[in-house]
Image (cartoon, rainbow, N blue to C red):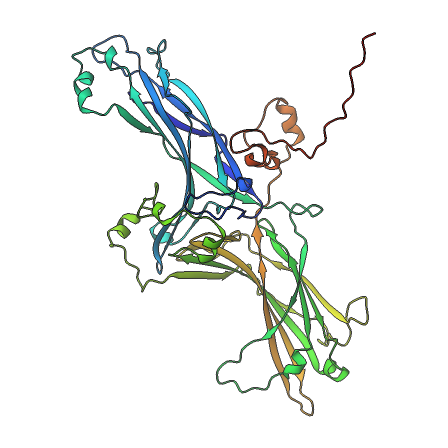
Length: 510
């Protein structure tokens, strides 16, 4: 009788805080990382025994097993599937821990063999998980079932049955015993784990906003199209325009707008050039760029310790691959077009009703009078809030064009940019002709998730006793990683920077 295994993590979510931590030793052969960047995934494995229902006996026999090994494995995988790149898998990590230290364990349901309830033992596990792993997500070709990044726990028990001697010598079990191996294995059902990453706002900022970052940009004119012979603004005039843009250092996924500040200065322009030069409008667009690859990203390989090739498919197949992998292994899956190493998907995050175009009020001669408090600087400030669509409104081969967090993984990456274009008009001297140019530049933008602090209502506090704890504790995010509290051998870390109290001799007994 094989034991029944059931993996019970304390939480099915593995929450990581901060950016992906790449502080690890550069040793890829053994695939190790710095414990300071590890997070803890804890829980227990329930090992259960139950006696089978006898066919000819009224009393059930005692089930005894010698549990020789019990392992728990945390494994992550990433797969891409697109019409142009085809199918590509990669094993992100594989962390295995042996939970039985020392000699095998004798398990028996003696005394409860007649019960319909199983006799169970819970074995606690605590796995250090590297802090650079990408989040759980689904992406790729939706027509054949999207792939993505997934994580799961797997458990395997190696045991030997000790109850053959308790049965009849003429039983079918004893008859087959010489033909089977005494050491057997049992696997637990796969336990999916969802990995999430949060970034806490800096101290002093609101829970939904990050501080503004300044960018001194070099705005370039748009390239001329073929066949265009129109006049342009003199380059020496455009070089005198100084541009500073301000956007938040990060934008949370629950924010529906992006604060944007544009500062213009023409300090080196003479009075006649300030009179001829006008800024009539500017446009702002928030773009999301998704890159799908069928080969590992060199940038990711340089920063993070991916498993070596001998641990990758097809040398070692994934535990839970996409169903289409069978077609790829037999070379029956073909792309509609010639295969490419990578393909990207770009789309705007603006709502469909927004164009991103803003008209500058007045006559546009912004360099004649600045809006700065310092008159010698003559800065002209344009400030607005750029709306961001909260729900996708378009779809293509990769599914809905939904907003994602900024991330990088071996086969899939998401980047965000703010594209700005400034329309300039200039009256040519000694002529009635007015020419125009568009100066453009792009800024990197980061989309992140922040922890959700759930504050219970007063009615909920009155209804529930104070001793009852929620399964998902909102304060769990303040706990440090396991490796920050304990050494790899399990000993507790001691902070020796805290001084000991001054020694005081005991008082003499009176």
